[in-house]
Amino acid sequence: MKIKVGKESLFYIAIFLIVLCNNKFLCACGLDSIVEYLAFFIILFYTFVYRLKTKKFIYFLQLAIVLFMFCIGIFMQNLSVGIKKNLIFSMIILASIAVVPNGILRRPEDLRKLKTSIICGIVVSTLLAILSRYGVFTVAVEGMFAYGFDAGLLHKNYFAYICISLFLFELILRNYSNKKQNWKSLIWILLILVANSRSAWIMLAIVFWILQNNAFKQSKTTRSIMIFFNIAAIVLVLILLYQDIALSSESFAYRLRGVENYINYYKGDVFHLVFGNAEMAFRNSGQSYVDNIRSVVGWNGTVEIAYLNILIKNGLIGIVGYLLIFLIYIKKIVTLQNLQNSKVKTLIYTFLTVFILSGLFEAFVGNINLSYSVISYLFLCNIATGDRFKNEQ
Image 1 (cartoon, rainbow, N blue to C red):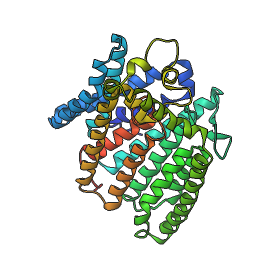
Image 2: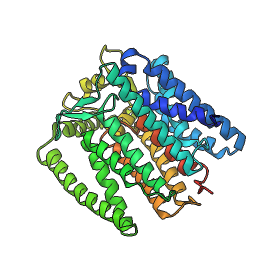
Image 3: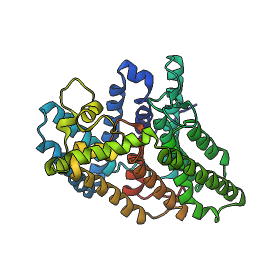
Image 4: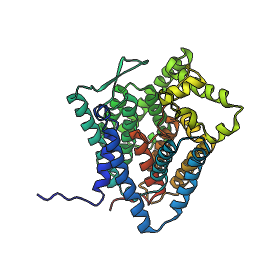
């Protein structure tokens, strides 16, 4: 039997490695960085070699503009050479995968391969965590359950958001298949629920809310399922809002207080608001990045919100850089052609919406060390900014 290995095989292996780099066992052994940089090397190799072949240099102009906004603050801050190099290197990787498409996602079959690579990463991560006795559950500080399933990743929230991505991939691929296998979508919904991540539950509710307008154009069975989950999602959101706002959830309040503390502390310091304050966050104090910030602006807040981290590292001008990336995605999604139908475009918009809103709860948007972040940027860049997503013949 012959096994056909395509020229993009290494790219999908890199996606597999991206998922594994957040595995508990690999992180404990100190192997996560090696796995992560190997994956990034493969991805960037595909990206720049492909772009140089196509000679579409508009993407390099966009990359230069975004990098300027990401790095100008880092250059202007009083940072050591080592820290500047590390921050700029991470910004180059993030901007490259977010702005420059590599031409991988051109067909539905490519998206299936991407989905399969992620699933393989989750399965191997789960097995590694079980065999190494690191476990597959994260203790929940708050929530309906005491634990959440994490598939061997560092935190249950990381796993939950990856499952949201896979759920949306499944819905997109349904439009290119004659077999409507509802059970696959239900599996991802179930896994999101057992992850016990309240922010992911809220994102799932938003997904159902966005898609409900299309539900009435689908089959009777699918329509019934969508209506049921819409009702369940609305009830869930009301419960979560009651818990987080009415009962003053400590975990959610910590996030908000972190933003409030930082802005109040530096509201009179225009330079650090505009260009960032990485020198404070990465100073050599013997404390962690998080504790460096909290020890200055207040211990009653945290820095889990992505946009606060961006404000600290890159300043307001860095925030503008991320807005530019999102605007590029939106503009390109509007002009996408050769889609099976408008449902696919709606699902891509939904994916982008979830990714942007996740930054209000988690650190994904500005952190390339998290699997969900890399997967999201690669998908959005290549499906929206790259070549047209063509139907299978």
